[in-house]
Length: 226
Length: 306
Picture 1: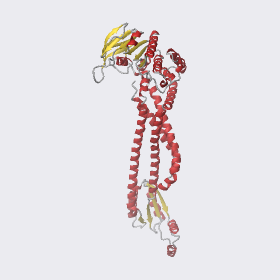
Picture 2: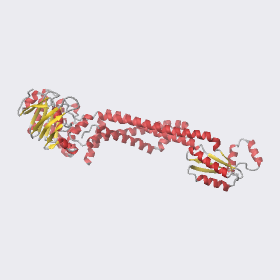
Picture 3: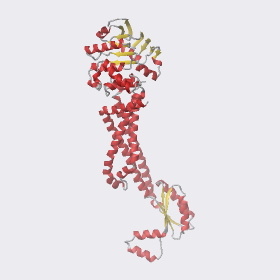
Picture 4: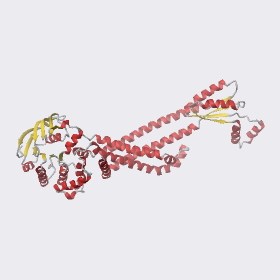
């Protein structure tokens, strides 16, 4: 479903952030990318949702090369890939409801569908009562769960999580990982980048280890080893 | 499509209200900008009105001899009226000239007695000629002089007063031209400076939300879906600022009205504000709305990456 073909990404200065990476991810997999800061994890993810383009090689999503997609196709790709980040990236002037509704609106859903889907997905992340709160009124753990709700509300094929537990305490981090596992069990491919050992160990699925932009280990059912 | 428009409008309005402080800053700066724009319109009108008044005081008068017949004068009047630079020509008959003379000297019995003793009207008829532009008097006077020379034998034209006033008219012409040019330059510079300030304020307002724009891109929003609400907010900045300026201008011009009339002669700022209100409304609110929308459009474009 996702195929990185000899991908290299170099920024203006210094060594490439990602070097000659070849990686295949099958539908329904839960893949954890681990490595130190600067190992190239975030860049690898960013290239998948086309926030940045590879300097060499190609990335395929469902056999379509991402670089070759039109602007319209790119927007459709993004609606098909949910993203969550360490800093949550919620829209601060919108309520929880509006944050999640926004993702549905850009996908062209009707107001009635949105009114039905938003409470449902909030229930899934355990925050049904926070519908009308603003992000600033929520704790970090709650904000991250709202971000997850927004990422999955369009039922994407892939969920990308870039250090989703980086700003959370262990209990909230554990909750977020449990939600990710639940989403994966429902059939969504999860692509998680983290340097949190306990998170990776608790997932217990495929672990790809990166170091200095290269993949140095790929274990089908691994643990965090560096 | 309609649903999207409704959502964009709603988010634009919500953004305007919820980003209260940023909106307030943008509205304040735009109010100042539009105030300058309105001030420039009014100052321009005051300048034109003053220049027009001064221009109207200038004319060329052709005095005819007492022997000149009415037909001869009418013929000359017709030829002058054919000149495209002439705005209008007024014929003052001998009788009218006498009446004006008598009125002017009504308290001067000695002069009136002398006039009565003459027994006949010593004054000739005249033509008062007004040109469209003060700079055109010279050429009109030139052509009149040519006629005077051609008709010298007939002894029709007594004198043309342009040559007596030439130095004053030339100076006035150059003052009018210079003030017009300086006026336009000042307006352009001031207008451009304030526009740039307003544009940058909106850019800063949007800079604070660049991360949001990034998120909107990430969830797959189209360019217009991201840009639209910011443009609506920009339009609202312009609308609120424009209406504020118009509301402030009413008491301000009312207060300045009598003073302006004393200073400029017949130009009253308040009467001008009332009579030109549709124009001022259109320019102030229109440029506010246009500036807001355009600034937002350009500012958001920088952060859109699909």
